[in-house]
Picture (tube, rainbow, N blue to C red):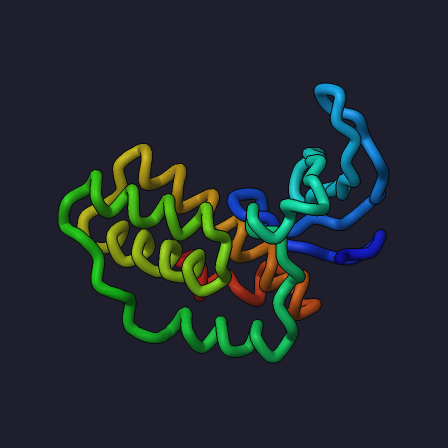
Length: 155
């Protein structure tokens, strides 16, 4: 269970801070919820405590893991489908799972594709989302600024 003040990563949204843990009644059922405030933007979310793990809420990676992810970003990219629709679905699934290396794969794949052939509007939007999620977690885990990761992020 997370505590108030903990930094967490929520799939598709990135890093948030647990602002509150409280009981809420929704549709006549009272459950315990985490109230998250996301680092980027002014968005908040309520996540039921009992399903937090199922939806992929997890602690922000450690500094050591951050260093491993940085190295991983410079390794060769994973194989991807040439079929746009298949590739898009596979990348979207990785983002929904929220696992750090899956998000890193999406960023690497789309950086390479952009350099080779350019990105469609849908893939450009996915790249920006994946980049934002990955960058927010690396910044939170490392204590470094965004600029420290610019080259790795294709900038």
